[in-house]
Image 1 (cartoon, rainbow, N blue to C red):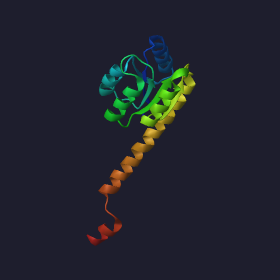
Image 2 (image 1 turned 45 degrees about the vertical axis):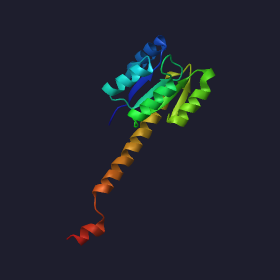
Image 3 (image 1 turned 180 degrees about the vertical axis):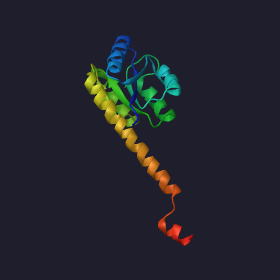
Image 4 (image 1 turned 180 degrees about the horizontal axis):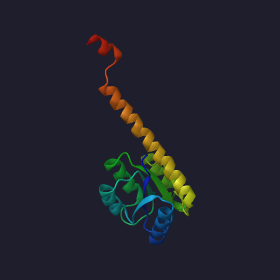
Length: 148
């Protein structure tokens, strides 16, 4: 069974390193980035299933980064991470393609629960795509009988 691969994107270095260490101790495969641009670069180099993405970052903010992630990597699930004053941005993120949002300070168990939910959602979508492709490749019973 495939294991969750998680990326955390946040410009607060202390939050980033602490969360990464704790998640790795729990056995989670984690990649971190401190900006939207760095996140996009690392997504090109690493397999990632779910991104936890801070809304407020200098330069490319979370919503702009989300739009690029969804354009370049549509199967990656994104969860917005927001402070109390930026709830509107998290809602905008949901409208843009994020699957959920977390508020800071985010509890580690809550991060993992939402990431696992998003990962399950992705696996479900991948399975529906596989089934649809197989149906396209397989002939109907009527076509098989007609050709024999």
